[in-house]
Every structure is written in C-alpha cells, then in structure tokens.
Amino acid sequence: MYQYDVIDKEFTQDRVAEFREQVERRLAGEITEDQFKPIRLLNGLYLQLHAYMLRIAIPYGTLTSKKLRKLAWIASTYDQGYGHFTTRTNLQLHWIKLKDAPEILAALGEVGMHSMQTSGNTIRNVTADPYAGAAADELDDPRVWAEAIRQWSTLHPEFSFLPRKFKIAVTASAKDRAATRVYDIGLAMRRGRGGELGFEVMVGGGLGRTPYLGPTIREFLPTRHLLSYLQAILRVYNRYGRRDNIWKARIKVLVASLGAEEFARQVEAEWAKSEQEQVDLPDIELARIRADFTPRFEPLKPRSEAVEALKASDPAFARFVRHNVHPHKVPGYALVDVSLKTPGQTPGDMTSEQMNVAADLAETYSLDEIRVNYTQNLILPHVKLDDLPAVYAALKASGLATPNIDLISDIIACPGLDYCALANARAIPVAQHIAERFADPERAEAIGELKIKISGCINACGHHHVGHIGILGVDKKGEEFYQVTLGGSGEEDAALGSMLGPALPADKVTDAVEQMVEVYLRERRDGERFLDTFRRTGVAPFKEAVYADAH
Figure 1 (cartoon, helix red, strand yellow):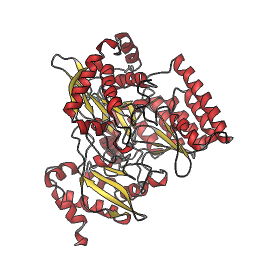
Figure 2 (figure 1 turned 120 degrees about the horizontal axis):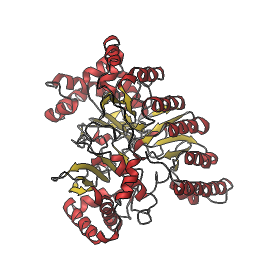
Figure 3 (figure 1 turned 90 degrees about the horizontal axis):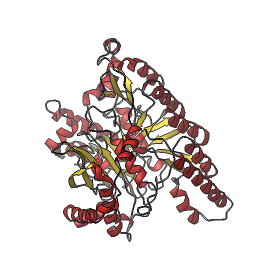
Figure 4 (figure 1 turned 45 degrees about the horizontal axis):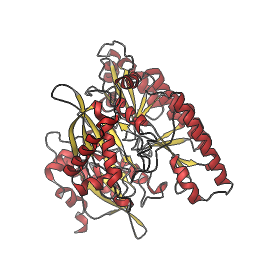
C-alpha cells in the first residue's frame, strides 16, 4: 500500500502543530465555538451528543498491522477502548476530549494516517472494492486508481470548497462490492473492444433525503484520461451546483435537474477544453504508485488437506469457510472476512484488544494487510489455505469468527441517536434485537443471503435505501418509529427499496422482520435469494403479513 513520503510527513506535522495552537486558543476561551467549528471540521473533529467524535480516514479501506495497532492504542488511550468502523471505511472514535485531539492527530501522523477531508465540502475519503488486489474476478487492482485520485484530490485548491461534500468509489470487478451507483462518482473498470482498460463513469448517485442511483454518463473512459475527466466533472459541478440550499447542493440534484444526457454533454465540453492542461497521470507516476500495490505471493497448492480435514471434523469451521472465506486470484490463498456482527454486538464496533488480534493475524498470515469493508466488517485479504485453521482459531478466541457474512445478522447500522446529533431514532438497539432473534447459525444459513441496513435518520449513513430490508428511524411526536423498505440493492443490480407501509413502533420492528422472512421462506422458488423472491412477488404478500393485525 502507499507509504507517506517526506513531503507528506512534513505537511502532516505542520498541520498538527497549527491545529494544536487553535485547540489551545479554544480551551483558553480566546475563540468561540462558532469560530472554532470550521477549524475542527477541517481536521475531522465533530461535536456529537455526548462528546467530540474524531473521524479517521482509511483510504480505500486498507490498513497495515502497524496502522491498526496505532488505532487500537489511540482507542484505549484516548477513548473508551473501542472504535466504530463506518460505511465509508473510516474509523470513528466517539468519546474524544478536545484537549487530546492534537495528540491523537500527531499519533496518526507517525504511521501515515490523518483525518483531513473526512468532513467539509470537499472530496472525501476515496473508497474501493475491499477485495482489491485479491479478488479472482478483478481486471486490475482498483486501489492503484483510488490512490491516484487520493493524491490528486487531497487539498486540491480548485475543489476544496465545493457546493457540498463529494464521494468517489472505484471497483474493477463485474461484482460491485463498492456500491458505486450510490456515490457522487462511481468508477467501474471495463475492458474496451481492443482490450484496453477503462472505466464506466457513473455520476449523481447518493442516498439521504432524495436518493438516486448514479446514471452512466460515459460507457468507456480510457484509464489514462481518468484525472482530467474527473476534473471536468467537478468543474461542471463547482460551476452549477446549488449553494443556496444545503438539501439541494449535492451533485445528484444537479444531474437529476439537468438530466444525465445534458450533464454528460457539459462534462464532455469541459473535458475537451482541458485536454491541453496535462492533468492526467504520467506513466512513470502510475508505475510508482502501482509498485506500492504489488505483494509477493508464493507458489502454493490450490487445495489444503488440513482445511478439508478440519471441515470434515468441525461443523463450525465448515460453516465459517462457507460464509467467511472466498476465492483468491492466486491459487493456494483465500480472502477471509472478519465479522464485526456477533449477535448482540454494535455493528462495526471493535475493541482495542480485537484490533490488536487482527493486526497480529494480518502481520503473520495476510502479508501485513487488513481491509475495512463498507459493510462494517474487516477482511484478511491474503491468507494461505494451510493457515486457515490457525486464523480461525485466533478469530474464534477473540469473538471475531461469527460465520454470518451476507446473512441476516450481518446488519449495517449507523450510530444513530445513541451518539449522533443528527439522528431521529436509535439504530444500534434495533440491529441488536434483530441479530439476536436470528442468532441460530443453522436458521440464518437456511434463510440465506439477506442484507438488512438501518439508518437513524434520513441522511442514510446506514444505506437503508439499498437494503434488501431497509429500516429508517423517524421521530413522531417524540417517539421512535421505523419506516421499512424492501428490495433495495447497492451492488451491480442496484435498486432503491420500495416502501412497505406505515412506520412501525420500535417494539414491532423485529417481529415484522420475522414475518417478512416467513413470507420469503413460503414463497421462494428454486433456492431464490430474498431479493429475487421480492422482485418476483412484489411488496403485497410482505405488506399483508406485517399489517394483518391492523385490518
């Protein structure tokens, strides 16, 4: 992965020193909270319900053991011994004291991390397929391109004050594991007719108050033109994006109002004007970046006798392999999903002790890499098949071996009203109650793939719009209710969910999920997934089951 150079390090140190002075002024009362707010937000520091929250950038979700150990140390030293991994692959610390914030930023800088551009109307943390560099179906390592975008966009003078925050996701597989259609810009690598690599460019996706799936504005953009084309998109947005209304300032509103065809025409015209600016990545720079993403794999046997023997003798291990272990592009290796969704756990939370265990496993068994998935789980991307039993044993001992990836208890949930000042309702308890109801691994496996996503407010940090079952917390005269949608997807078959019916009180949500599951099990054909059955039957049988008592 990319390593800080001398310029990066010096700049980060200078930035921390400047922020330290501003924090001292705030604590001394020399500046007000209103004056301090834009300064702290530029450094990823939010003021939430109970304390300051620090959002730490994890570009394209990639960590080394050293970085993860530093995060564990910060969480245990300056927080309450845990951190929260988000749908943006960032780590949030929810109990920060203002006086400690500069020390935390300095500690992050020691390992090549920061919290810049995790807030504000700028280009945020660039995300990518969490299986990047290991997926058997990828055309290229998308992190190479995500890193090029990160370097190009960090503190970009032209795009530091956009109409609204801006998010970019990159994938290089037909299977969309990066949710590219719900981003401001989604980039999906494709191969052209002559074999050249390029990107399908999608613009104007986003969830929140007005959800949109990003339409394709260019079917194929050669990779060599990536940065100049991004520049053209952002210039059109910077020029015409609304600044008078925060709810209509995202690029999705501009694309929807102009229409995808007209927006694409304007981008192409802007791009044609900028062809002489030489903003695209030189081949020598691309080679330098690519060299940072080229691990050395050993030649191994494609099958492990130790794994097969343990699968035969240990049903729990066999279930873990079925759901948490995936094919690697190099024979003899595997991708291992680390679930942060043990029933009863807060989705995405990880203790400092667990972070250290994961860091040790990454260093010993995964070429010193670990990934953060937008589904709020972690991944050991390069595990030798022969090492799977040892990895499983260590994960199991630390409460990290729940075999539920993509099953009903693998729930995405934002922090909700337990932490967030923007939330209308709690998300964490709802997720916990549902996961506990379906904690039986055999039952969950019989149900199969079912993705539940929960948000505590309309901002949709829990991606509820694209859940197979989406749950949105709303406030009704001081009481927490939950709207349910069905049939959403954030993958290559992207869709926004359909409304089930009137919002449900909190104590009815888990029962409603169980009723919908029973409808699915009754109606499914030939091993259909929940999503397939819903798309065939429509909402009617699910609605009838949930609201039967209301008639």
